[in-house]
Image (cartoon, rainbow, N blue to C red):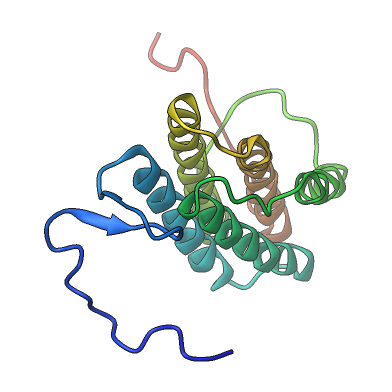
Length: 183
């Protein structure tokens, strides 16, 4: 592969617009750029999570997720371009089912926290939900591959289960929400 970037700054965005992958320009605060930005932020939080010591199954899946999120960002950057498929959603579901099978059923809501890795996983989950909301907003106005929406929805579920798995693996309990503690 040849060099893609010979200069990091181009000055083409200095007036508040940015180029999309199809060569068109759009405002930096457009729904599309906002969705791309939050997917990129999510990928950065996944990278932060990956910097922790993790079980191999979770570490390996997070690498795949990072690639998937880059593909989703690419799709969003090139209107009408589709590369994300149902196979990716099915992979997430398989991982989710495998991890969840080893966990105690939840009888109460849990608070983010426990181990440091689980807390970062919860952060990734909340950023994922925001990314999903931004892609939904975009999909109301423009064509978006609906698989991307299913992927983000399933990923947030997977990140929740990963956080619980990480707490379990570290010997730290989930922090259960206490109802009526102020009554």
